[in-house]
Image (spheres, rainbow, N blue to C red):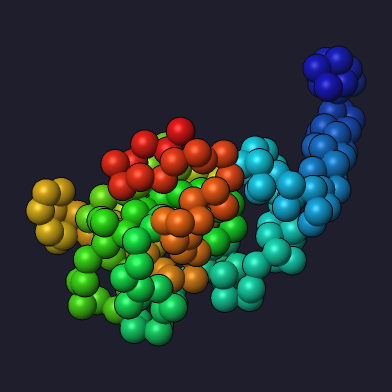
Length: 193
């Protein structure tokens, strides 16, 4: 690829079309990931960022795809995990990354599952969000899935409220922790390896 770029630079006037062609060939190669390959990546917890949105659309329900990849929000008080009180770990619905633990969940009255702390901070990315004319902090998984937002009106000890869409998560009960890719232990302490 470096040699191709050097050739393009020397070519001058035809540089942009050739560079665009090279870029589109690279993107086309990434789109060749199949659903089966993506499932394998998810099971191993590897190469998650290489899975194209078109494949995610095939892997997820329409609601999950809308929330995770189009930054959607489910209607309040409708989520399947809002009233869940079982002990275990909440993983992202697509990449299967452990992000929240049941011991950090609390009833906020907002209509969405709420947590006062993340379970594995390496799997969560916080990003400024100025959409809808509001200043918020978006909560994403490290593979880019939109999960919800975090606010500074939560309980002690953190004072935070991670307001998360149920459709963005799946729940893994404590007795089935072996179902989380790459994890040997999913204790509430947050030690996942």
